[in-house]
Image (cartoon, rainbow over all chains, first blue to last red; front, side):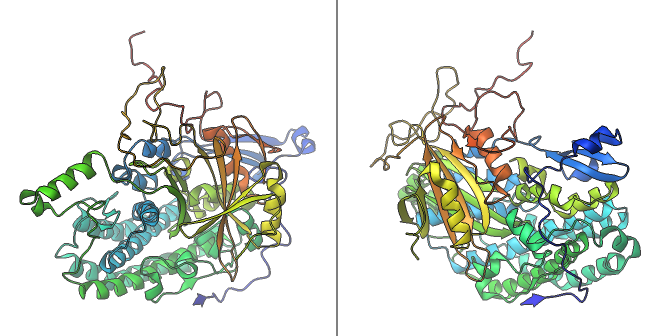
Length: 425
Length: 181
């Protein structure tokens, strides 16, 4: 199950490095400040390497980072408030826009939460297709991470290679849902449409090609002397500190914790597919790079298994037949009065979701993505809250940077793989 | 699995396959310490505050128009068959805990608060609570006593009001430069 690298090291560091008393803030001591050697630099909010709009206020002593805190909120758009004012049916369109790189996973977690309250059965074909698309989405998200993280450290060619494959993945999404991003292909009860003809050969082509593309990336970056110099041994985070700070996903696995929700709490079809969880014990930026690289290969394996299963499910239902919640098939509207009424009620008023509160978590490309929803039994969610893995990842910035140089800052912040849209929501 | 040893436990609710532990807000740190050290919940996944103003009243679902705000969304709750169960107080703060261990499990720690009633910070228990508590303070106006840096996090420092409260209207924020000045 676990892949351990040959690059063994001593423990990352002794004890804890989480700053006190504020865990997310490095503070300059009064004596150092009085020497007059501390310069405060404002990094961002508009900077190409901040993956959005992140502002870091950095205190420098020479090239050493001695103080740091992050300022966020520039992309706050009130997704959660807006979703409270929309019917459950319409609120699904908001969820993918929170994280514009892992849109399918965001959509999934909201849909799963509504289905849990409704206690709905979802057909097997929908489960497998959701798994397939979520894994393609993970590849897409990791490709953008790899492209931009390498670009920021000067490896420009990585950007062109990664975006070549990213385009192919987006073409697959467009083939399935009609949109390249924010597909709204998942809905409560299953999928919005059946899998289109032509998806399987195209997807199979991608699955066959992608391992070769990964070899390309590996050849360019894996043993590249500059890349190793810039990433090895920096941005250290121990396993205990990572758990204490609520880190998840690739950051946690790069700190040596064998933890993946797809294995420990299997959802969708993850219990029935065969894949490995890459774990690296070094806790540095290079380990995070390795986790991302290995995960892409594992996701490709999962997609291949999903395609095999889905091709055998031709003609099976792709969505639940619960007419109180799921729209009736389009062709029935011309012949059935009852279908027309259900269609009208769902579109105008929305379906009602039973009273209660649930918390559903999935393994998004960035880690533990969770959705809390509370319902009063009405047609709109009472409260929606997203647990954004990027938000938690940024909390670790101060700990990772505690002995960093200013030049390492770009590599470290990049390695945490944050999407600012998701941080600010 | 029972949680009877949790200090200050008021009620245990099992619903939708999830466990909710309602505790006395004044002793939440004690309960949190117990859950971390005895029960093994070493990972704080999330802190969610929820406002239940207007819960279960007629014509209310998700949005309450105020005299000052625009009523963009006429409530559509005429067809209620039954009213939801009443809540003890206006605000709920939910701590979603996870055990990252060989025995993975989740639990929700819940406290109920009135407007302006503080709850002690759980920062000494889980350092990752820092920003989650600041977010609940910023958007919902929950005061976490003892937090060393309880400032707004997503909104501007001079923002007025807490937007996720139910009495904060959607569309009530005036758009700058909308009229000739």
